[in-house]
Image 1: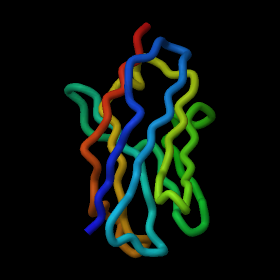
Image 2: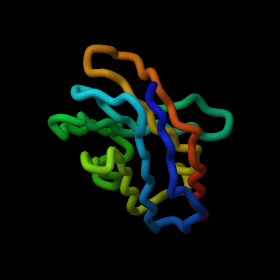
Image 3: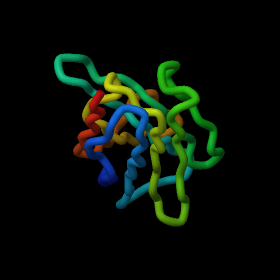
Length: 119
């Protein structure tokens, strides 16, 4: 079992920044990946970014490239999402998720943290 706990959400004006954290605990293994998803009201959940825990390789959806940065701290078992130049369309509940590198599906999810960007 893996437990994920997000923090760092809040209300920010457009152009501002926030950093989300996702602390992982429990039975984690090498070769896993951590990702951030988001879900806005009335919309489907969408992929935001992903990082390989072992290699640090990252992936982003096009709309956040150049503004968001995903990173990890191996010693703290924590993933981060640094969000800069936030836009109102970034408003959503942000979730972190875990999957093994051999599995295309995410098997553990956090409870989510609200990010609201005012115009």
